[in-house]
Length: 247
Image 1 (spheres, helix red, strand yellow):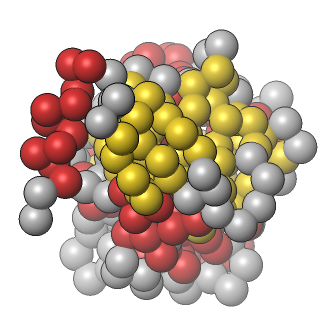
Image 2 (cartoon, rainbow, N blue to C red):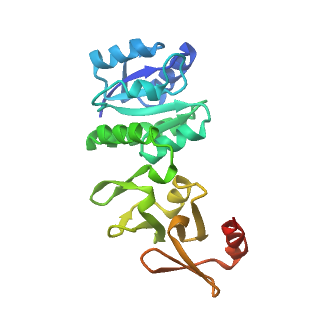
């Protein structure tokens, strides 16, 4: 599958390096243009309608996020490029959008392009980009949404409705306060990283709980969360967990 791509980065050297890496490792990507100027890039996107955009986040005058907000219907797949920026990376990961940390690793690039190719086929870019824009305007972690690839498609769920995540045979069952659970093909480790925040605590190798839904701690080494779910707390984690709960 051939993919048309546009490269946007304020550093010409970064564009040159990325273009070379794409030629060597991702020959299916056809670079149709590049730009160091975000304002010019907006016009290029409109005129060239690329399927995939490699977009630097930190650019003078306009960030990659601000550029995205300029489009009413951002229906192109994006792979963000960034130096280490935890806030940016978390925002992108929550919306299941691709990203690369500079300097770009060849294997990471190939994996990101492969994922983008599948997303282009599924035509999920518009919904994910809109969710990212919405999340960027939300300050409270619990009020943000995450996108979960499930068996039936993409699920857009509010973090504050998640009571706990349960690892089941390499999959993850996500439980909610207001709906039936859903099963994700991602492992519990994926959600531990995705929901890496003080509001969540891994009480057991197979369980991650939302502390805002914690109702009781039982002396036998269990917690009860919303929905009357009883969850074990690993013996090795009990002391730290109780310390964590102290104000």
